[in-house]
Length: 341
Ligand SMILES: *Cc1c(COP(=O)(O)O)cnc(C)c1O
Image 1: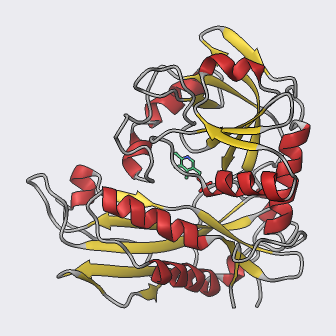
Image 2: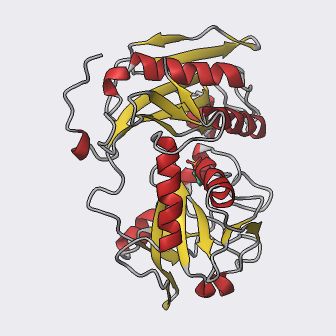
């Protein structure tokens, strides 16, 4: 397989059209077979439910080349399950989980020339998504849907080296109690755009959102879950019904316990106790873990002992172990890597 002539190191995180994408349509109560197609454009009614009432959900995952030259996808069964949960909450039809995994593998196979080589740090980002497509003007769910998967190569996350983030405690809320914070819906991102633009304008990399009910507990950022390390080396992650269950965070908790022998805890984390942690990181598919060096709460600075130059030692160990598993340098737990053949 001849690779595309792409400067893998310098592609950044942007959309690049690849050769094939998967589309399946839902109509009259059933999904069709679905197919790989060339056309990257979508034509729909001006009154499509997705355009008027934002009935859309998505997933994000990566395919990449391991040390021994296999192309793999990391735990796609969990993305399939999460999309199914998102669909139920949004009154959308579930796309069968086994067919989801098949569709993802087919898209990777069809765009193999865009899967970056081992060692480049770049990956093929996969975006499965589903939306209501027929005209809807009275508020109700659509009757017709499309499930799609496209792929786009993305560059290494830590290009200029690892740089700890500075984040602020946001005055905006991300998700209401009993709302949609726990599903991966476009609407959660639409309402975060103002918060992230204003955070950037004020010199912060990200927003730390608190629980909207009491504004005392740590939830997550716009697109990543928090992991904290206590001074005695325990891994703590916030528990809340309005946090998106990150697959990376769940995998890191497993790695902490089973590979590194660390104690792990998922519990409510109060903003007041954050100053006592030794390390802080953000977990998600894009970076695996990005270290946080400083959190600013309305002028009060919380500076982690790990500093602004590098990852803390425990964060680094977690990062190296999980990326080692993903890249095939460390044996993966059963079922974590799906090989594209
Ligand atoms: C996608 C997402 C994450 C990260 O989840 P991963 O499965 O690890 O990529 C975290 N928080 C939010 C709000 C997200 O949308």
